[in-house]
Length: 371
Ligand SMILES: Nc1ncnc2c1ncn2[C@@H]1O[C@H](COP(=O)(O)OP(=O)(O)OP(=O)(O)O)[C@@H](O)[C@H]1O
Ligand SMILES: [Mg+2]
Image (cartoon, rainbow, N blue to C red; front, side):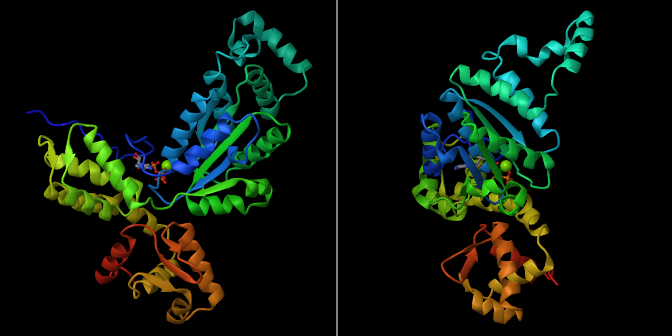
């Protein structure tokens, strides 16, 4: 008997067969893409820890925009980003752009090179903004708008700041444009607190947190059933619990459990248990270690002080344990929230947010790997 094909996607930015949760943001943007009036959601910043599904969401929303007649270009905040955006617009919108104005002309036969030079000297200098305006005019003539998605935002990148500034002009000019950005929480908060792009503070921000268990369970089961197999109910419950609402882990647990005995129609309790164990060690290598390495010794001390509490920690207790001023403790707290490791649970109370980070840290401490 042949093995069933594994439908899970434990990779990066791959749209899964069934997306768990995230319905509200998708619905809001869908509405914004089809609305005749400009909606604030058209400028949105998505923030979330590693593996919470930022890239996936950007990809999915770009598809949704295209279904509604927008042109979308997806880029990452890296040097060359502005050029990349322009080149991609010309490519993706080639069917809407009038060819006279297409820059592909510059590369044509030799006699024209001279003409082109002449022309350039006489024309007022153009720049990225003016070229993009020309493109937007043409899109608008076809009733189409432009969605730019920027993944892994980074305020250190000059082009990021330039893009935000030019985009602000486009919005003011009432052009049909949208900007969706995504990044790790500390990059997003650095971007939002930068004076040069202060208008972004008025953008919609979406924090990608945990997904509710029932949504994870539902997405797991649908993915399994639609691909010809079934799940042992207790195993499924156990898997949902272990996933802790964390999208990347859902794919990883699903993938490994599926592969335990891929020729059986039923994924058994033991298959799930096997998948969970394997997924947890992979999570450690691929997410937890990387997150941990970015912490300062003070951050680690703060997180370790939280281990003494069973679930939630009161800031007042942490101040006492750490023997630091409340201002200093407030700073560590913010850094760990920004890193997606802990989350606020009401006033003055925090808890671990990144699944298994607590276990990971206790283990490290028990092994004497922390000083
Ligand atoms: N809502 C969801 N439901 C189920 N699976 C999801 C969901 N969102 C993302 N995934 C899956 O989780 C994996 C990780 O998602 P993604 O790469 O988008 O995370 P990310 O936040 O961009 O991570 P990083 O910070 O490392 O770039 C993907 O393989 C994707 O298939
Ligand atoms: Mg990503």
